[in-house]
Structures are given as C-alpha cells and as structure tokens.
Length: 555
Image (cartoon, rainbow, N blue to C red; front, side, top):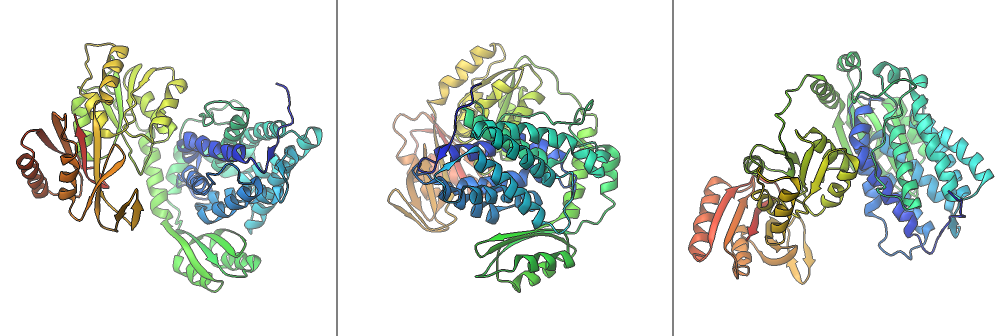
C-alpha cells in the first residue's frame, strides 16, 4: 500500500470524529471478550463495558457540524472522556483523549508526529495518575506503543503509517503482558484493558483506511503456542472469591483550583487502586474502599462532587466467578433444526410469544431501545443457534446496523430481516414456515415488514418540546412509525387517540401490554378498545416489556 501524506485539517474534522466513532464500534464488537479477560485489579468482568460506556460518553458529545475544528473537537472529547470515565479502565482510557487534545494543541492538522506525541502524553499521564503503577497492564501497552510511535513518526510522518505501526505494536505488547504481571499468567489471560486499547487502534486504523466493518472481532493475542479458551483458569476463579474487594467508588470533583497531586496522595492513603486525574477545574477519582463514604467525605474537601458511582466489588466478583463456572459447565445441546431464528426482544410475554411463534426454532437475545446488543453479542447468539442456516430479527432500528455486520463474521448462512421493532418482528415470525428453505423464508418474512405499522405509548421522563408537542414529565405520549401522534395524562386515552387516527385500512390491531400494566388494566384496555372501535379486530397480549405501557402493531 502506498503511504500518502494523510493529515486531518482542523477545519474538516469529520475524519477525526469518524475515527473516534470507529473505536467505539470496535470496542462494542469485542466487549464480551474484553470483559472475559478482566482479572486485574479486580476480577469483575467489566473492563470492556466500562471502556465502551466511556467511549459512548465521548461520542455523545461529538459535534454534528463537520466544519468544527479538530483542535476544538479534541478539547471537547478530552473533557467528555474524563467526566464520563467508568472504572479504572475508563479513567486510564481518558488519558488517551487528553493526550490527543494536548498533542494537537492549536495546530491546523493532525499528523503522524502529533499522534505519536499524543500516545506519549497518554502514557506519561496514565503513569502519573496511579501512585503505584503496575507493569503488564494498559499502562505498559501505552508506553510501548509510544516508543514505537515516536520511531515511526521520525521515519515517516504520515498518519496512516504511524497508526498502522502503533496498532501492530499494541497487539504484540498485549501478547507480552502475562510475562510482566503474574496474575495474568496464573489466570491464563492477557491484560483486558490493553487488549481493549489494541481493539480501539484497529478500529481507528480501519476507519482511516476506509475499510469495513470498522468494528471487527479480533482474536485475543495470547503468548506463543496458547489460545484463549474464552474464560479464565478454574483455580483462579475459585481463589478470587476468597478475597474481600470492597467498593469501587468513582466521582468527579469540580472547583476553580484542585491540587491533583495532593488529592492523589490523599486517596492513596485511605483506599486501594486509586486512579486520579484532572483538567480545567475538574478531577475524576476512582478508588477501592471498604467504606465509600470516607472517599466521598475526603473529596468534599476539594470541591463539589458529581457523577458519583459506587459498586459492590464483592458482589461483582462473586457474580463474575459464578458466570465463569457456568460457562465452564457442560451445557445441554439444543436439538439441531434446518433453520434457526434469533430474535432480539425483552419482556417475559414477548419472549414466550416469539419462542412459541418460532415453532421450536427460535431463541431470544435480550435487548431493545435502552440496551442494544453489540455485534459480538449478536454474533454469539447466531453461533449458538442450533443450525448452520439462521434468520436474524434485530427488531429495533438501532440494532439493525449491528445485525447487518453479522453475516460477514460467521461461516453460517445468515439472513437479516430488517425488522425495525419487536411488533414487526412478531409479524415477520408468523410467516416462518419450516417447510420452506432459508431464502424462501427470508423473502416471505421480509415481505410483511413494510405492511405493519408500529406504535408505542410511554411516559416522559422529563419536560420536552418535540415537533410542537409540549410534553411534561410524567405525561404519556404515543408515537406511530416514530412520529408523535398523541399526548395526554392517561396512557389508555393516548393509546385510543393513536388508534383512532390509524383505523383507515386496518384489519387487525395487536396491543402488547408492558410490565407496568396490571391484569386489571389490561382487561380494561381490551374492553375499551373493543367497545370504541368495533369495526376492527383487536388482540391484547401481555408483552411485559419495560419502558412502554403499550406496543402496537397495525396490520
């Protein structure tokens, strides 16, 4: 490949934001694997999740205006990463974005030399953020990547060239981590945070090269002659439950001036595994405590507290150990079928309905509006399905892009049906026929998707004005095909108003009641709708879905 002089001008920062979005997609695709590797400093299986949530906080603050300067974007994401940092890994990850902002400074372009400088700043800042840095961790990967980046930038200042060299070094650095940290060798894993960073670099490089998908699944770079089994060594799992871990305590401090070194020393005296850093009047604290109240009280001495998160690590470590044992236990293999169906849904009623409608060929992956499954989770569900021919129903417009990545990542024959909601997914599933082949089923199921209108009724969690509708906190509102069509105080009244406007041409309307709707309320709903709209056939079904009082399918 030719090495062009790739730069990112500050006036056109879209490529920079594309790289950042790609790193998020890459971590999302590998989150489960990163979690599975997590044994240090606490075996709680959350490193991948914490890195992903930190990255999502950065993405949420990215400008929509592509003319925003790259240096301004870098400053924004550095602050977002610090405030949104989750856990130890998230706070160390924030150092990378801090380095990026400082390296770009007021320059008008991002070059390979700037990128090399950003990794060095990230490495120095990360080591400084911990009072007792440990080798064989994400810190080591930062440092070794910085060494390679600086040599690469001297040889060729092209951004793609430097990033490619650094991405390759990250993989090799991760491979060496068990030789530096005995607990990794004991558990037969590599460092999870370091692997997460290597995944990020791979995504960024693929975005810069225009390769697809940006978020591909990477194999774990284990030491020579070894392969990651998917879980840690059983003896390590047993030993982990014998340790008292305390509470993971994370919070931000805001004040005009904060003595970061004093704060860091203070937290090191009262807690374990502290990671502290700050910028522009904000400090972020991560510390493990037996009594999290002591850390919060100490933090108040330095300024106003916000973004407080406290997690019981003993419970997390116990759950982690239980999950690892379950994954190692022999599992009953499902009976093989000619065609399997994987559907995304949440709610006990919807799950039961989908399984029964799938004629014994369907499995359900938990997910929906507030918990979109990752590419890795979708891929695992497809791989676990009891057939080499699989139909995938994303059942959510936000899950569809991830679902579309799956066919290229598996040896199985996969057909993705573009179901934009669980209502359209159920309608498509009712067309499933075990006497048809894969393509015939996919064609029949896809054909009905466009014939189903989907509505939703939920309550507003805050005051908002949308498309001329003033909606107050606690009020109910209805959307139909993503357009707000009714607002009111009573969910059933709002449901009725929505249906009233969609009767034309409707033959059957199915209403799925949410977990907040009682049996008596469901009965009242049925009676009201059948009385008010006698010309249409109604089915009121228990869905059990969270967040939505009613989901509606109009056919």
